[in-house]
Image (cartoon, rainbow, N blue to C red; front, side, top):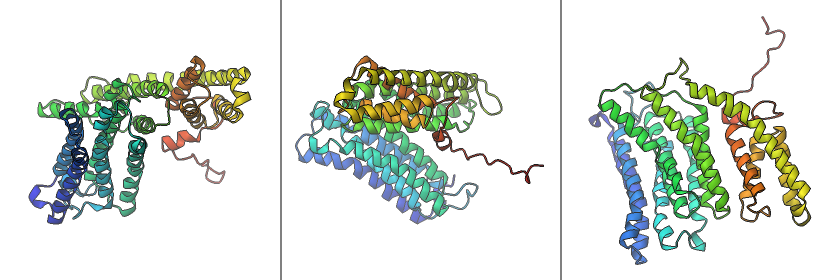
Length: 394
C-alpha cells in the first residue's frame, strides 16, 4: 500500500470529502431529533451505533486510500476515487442514515409512524441493489481497485448490521439475529490480532455458497424491514438463515487460524459432509414435504372456496418445488405468500411447516433428480456446458 506522501492531492481531497459525507449522514438524524425536541439521553445512545459505523468506514477509507490502484499495479495510484467508489460511499452514507431510525423504534415502541413505515425497507433495498451497480461501474470503466474491494466489503457488513438493528428494534427479527450483523467484526479482529502476535494466518479461498448465504441475509433483512410480513414467519426465517451463516464463519475461523485441516482446494471435512447431506440428501425430503403439504391444503378446501387465486398460486408453487422445476424460485414465492400479512393461510402448524420447508429449500437448492434448476447456474455463476460437435471431438 502506498505511503501517505505518495497519494495524489486530489485523491486526498476526495477522501476527506467522503469522510464529511459519512459524518453528515449521522448528523442529519441527530439534527432531526434535536429540532423535534426528542433528543433524550436514551435516544442519543441509540444513535451511537450509526456514529460507530461512520467512524469505522472513515477509518478504513483513510487506511486504504493508498490501495486505490488496479490489481497488479501498486505503484500506479488512480488520481480520484472514481464513480464506482463514490457509489459505494453513497451506500455507506445511506447505511449510517438507516441506523438513525433506531431511536424511533424506542420512541414508538416497535412501530414507526405510518409516513415512515416503508422508508427503512426502501433505504436498505436501495443499498442492496446499488451493491450491483458499483461493481458494474468498476468493471465497465476498468477501475476495479483494492480500495473499492475493501470499501465494498465494509459497506456490506455495516449495512447488514444497521439493518438488523433496526429490524430487531421493530420486533421483526429475534434479538439473537444480532449475531449475524456482528459476526464479521470479531472475525476480522481475530485475524488482526493473530497477525499482531505473529501467528500463522491462512488466506481464505472464495466460497460461492458463502456469498449466496450472505445474499440471502440481505434479502431477509430487507423484507423484514417492510411492514408487509407476519413477524411469526420472519422470525422462523431468521433462525433458518442465520444457522448456515454462523456455521460458515466458525468454519472460516478454524481454517484461517490453522485449526481445521484442509485439502489443496481448501475443502474441509465439514464441507464434504454438508455437500453430501445438506445439498443432496435433504432437498428431496423438503420437496416431498412441500408436495404433500400442498396436496393437504388443496384437499382441505377451506381457502379454495373463499380465496381461489391464493389457492391456485399456493398449489402451483408447491407443485413446482416438489417436481424440482424452478425449485428455489417456487420456494421463494411460497414463502412470500405464506408470510405476507394478507395471507389467508394464517399461522397454522401446516402453514408454518410449509414455510419452514420452503425457506430451507431456498438454502439447500433442489438437489438431485430435479427437472429444471436454472437458478443454480445463476447463483453459482456457472457457465452452461457447451457440448462438442463431432468435428471438434479428437
